[in-house]
Length: 427
Ligand code: EPZ
Image 1 (cartoon, protein in one colour):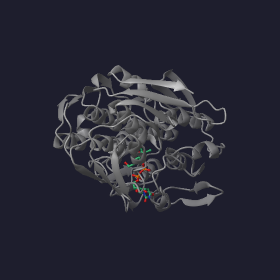
Image 2 (cartoon, rainbow, N blue to C red):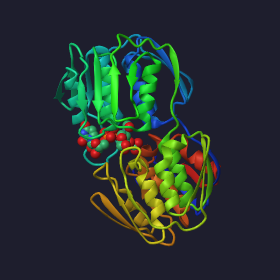
Image 3 (cartoon, rainbow, N blue to C red):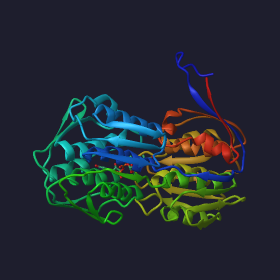
Image 4 (tube, helix red, strand yellow):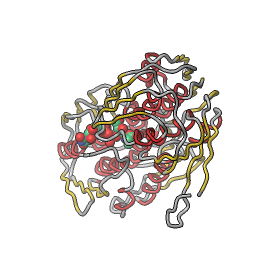
């Protein structure tokens, strides 16, 4: 038993190996939800959000909205109404916003709605340097002044005026944040070299449903024609989580299983489908369902993570588990984050043979993984270690579950339903 100074520690106990079999339902997208919730602050009225994932990041965001004066009504854990008629942008949200990365969307949203905002500099998963210089460049181009005060970032604007903004990197966060700041700006804003991830389209669709005029989301040029007001009074259902669906696809291959993944947008998963087929696996896309199966050892692969529609960085650790037992030596090049191979140390404790150097890792495929106590370092590493535990011989104990609970709804329940021997216990 671990000694954490008397604090109760939750862990997952997984006994494997189990080939996963059955059907799993995909929840709403975490990375869309954590942008749509702050986007509600632009509405002078209420909106209803459905298919909201029941995860801790969403609960935290709802708390922040309430601190800012919004009224959040829970119809079910996945369906809320947010009334943002009265907003107090001066509320003290500094500590709470430091807790997670996606709090940076409050800057764009409150700047757009109130012309002034101060939030804690964003925290979040430890994936190396995570600057927000491109967000700031965008706000300043629209007419805001920004400053850093005692660990907080402050942005002020008398008036935001649309302009052309070129992003040096197709940043997801900067694209959404500039979109939020410019929805109520005067004139037209053009974001060039915009990111194209599915959740960017979802945020634009949400804002348009509420009264915005955004065109081109999903391409690399987005045009935002400023409108006077977002009236809301409408409902919106969040897009299915591309990364959760990809996690189960890779779990099927890693465990030599056969899973039907329901309620997903198969087009969003084409890069993952292509890689699974390349390493020998089977994928059958049918409407909003994907069947993924393979009962053999996958072959080796070379993978580079890239912005959408490339192979997603958020599925890199889960793919790393698959390649740990592939036939031959695979290479993954991480194209987005500086430091996203911390999970490989944990997989090596389970018998994997992975050498990570900077942004590349070499996976010398072993016959099988063996259960061990492992520690989650970030959200997707957590999903990867669960998959590793289900595919490994013997017992795996997974610690630091708070990372996983931030972004996966009922993850152990979903895995249990498709056959995994997994339980959460408190030490
Ligand atoms: C989003 O992070 C996601 N988070 C991440 O999800 C995901 O890994 C990432 O996009 C890439 O797809 C949310 O949506 C909340 P970026 P974000 O701005 O927006 C550099 C998960 O597990 N950059 O697209 O922070 C940056 O350092 C996670 O769900 C700048 O240099 O990512 C990185 O190298 C974790 N300056 C690259 O761009 C900036 O101002 C892409 O980052 C902004 C980014």
